[in-house]
Image 1 (cartoon, rainbow, N blue to C red):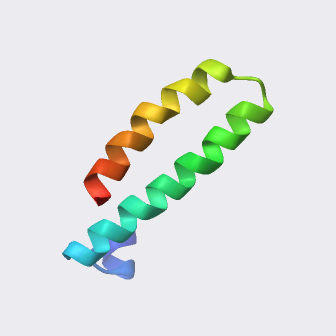
Image 2: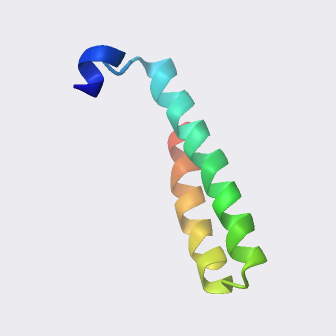
Length: 58
C-alpha cells in the first residue's frame, strides 16, 4: 500500500548514491550516540560499516 501511494523507489545511480550518503550520515549519528552511552565496542564496530558505505560511495 505504501509504495502504491508514494510511488516507486528511484533506482537511478544518483538516487542510490544519495541513499548511501544518508546511510553514512545516519551511521555517524549512531556512532555518536554509542559513544555518549559508553558503548565503545559499538563505536569500534561502526568503523567497518562506515568503510563499506564509503567504499560504495567512492
